[in-house]
Length: 169
Image (tube, rainbow, N blue to C red; front, side):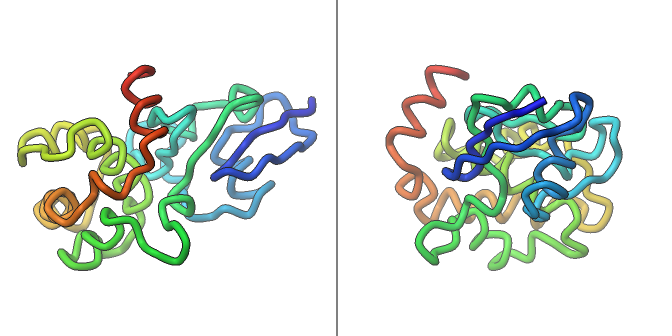
């Protein structure tokens, strides 16, 4: 079947197997390997991307489900050569060790900050509770998200994204 998907602002049309998972479409068909494939069961969250500005675990979503829709991956966080404050926070606060969970954590964190620019530690922990990090113990990830909140994450988002995210959330 043929699908057309907009990924990080670029439209792609591809012929795909109807059962192809979104994570495999992104990684194998488009070469966007930032999102990681970890478990195939939606337990780890390493594969989180946005589908129409809503976080989804791409290991349990079909590529066909994304046809005619917008997908955002961790590669899309950087804008005009500038890292997103979430990315900066992960660097500044050592929010990663092996880095496997990092792309999904960053996408979830960016979504959280778009909806709640000043989340408490507990709200950050709740937001990332559907994701597994086997290295950090989550402390530095929480610090990284709070750092992003304190260093302009709210100003970094584009107004159109914020409005649409609130309407669809």
